[in-house]
Image 1 (cartoon, rainbow, N blue to C red):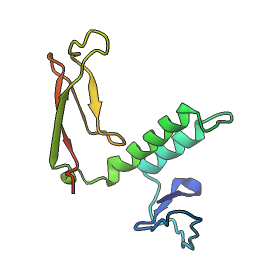
Image 2: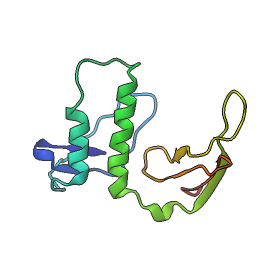
Image 3: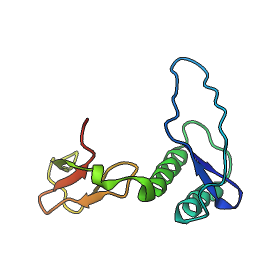
Length: 129
């Protein structure tokens, strides 16, 4: 869990257990253990550039959550864990023809590739454990 603090310094708490079917209460000691850096600046900008009020159907919130994950994962995700591989073909929904030049990404990361002229792609992914 990342806690963004005043001045874009932050703290990260790991291995927090979440219990199902009820309220979860935590007593955490939050300290500015990480200085302002590219991660905190990007996350702060995403948060501070939001405007207006939003509801649960708001797609911008989902997009912002994805941007925050990408900012965090860019620094803290260990890409050496991406030892698996997946591939496929991207096709048009109507005529089922392959589509070249489509970007395919692992959600929440910057890890991606582009489909070839035949709509095919191969991508490193986390291994299934």
